[in-house]
Image 1 (cartoon, rainbow, N blue to C red):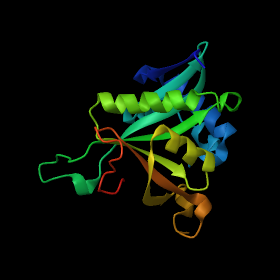
Image 2 (cartoon, rainbow, N blue to C red):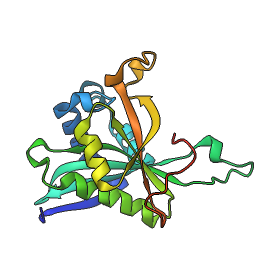
Image 3 (cartoon, helix red, strand yellow):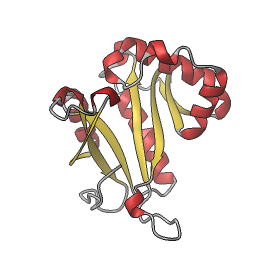
Length: 191
């Protein structure tokens, strides 16, 4: 799909991010830990603050937003030395969503590719992408891109964090190394 473009949103693009985020939450409520009902009540200052916490990438078709992904920084406290330096710089992809009518047409690929490229430009060591363990399509997509599964699991939704037996709520960390060895997997557990 050659008409799809991906661009990074700036801090002043908070309304564009809010609109696509709310569309994602409304269309795919089970795919996110947040809810449309809750987030639609947030004010401008909340959305501006959210924009400053991570890089937001939006896919557009003829100028209309059709997908989104966020790129955040992860710091594993175990990798921080006494001077506050980290031994590994990690990006995390999250909040990936594509409009249902464009799924399977390369939009998610372009978003993830843009996120990985941004992490590479920032000289990060690897990218972590959390995928629901029961999301076969998501796991297959991430694997085809080059992400590798790890043993790290976490609850997808906070309210189910106490129920370790709920496999429907678990997601696994998948790793994409940005170094020279595409088979390399970091030795420390992702956050």
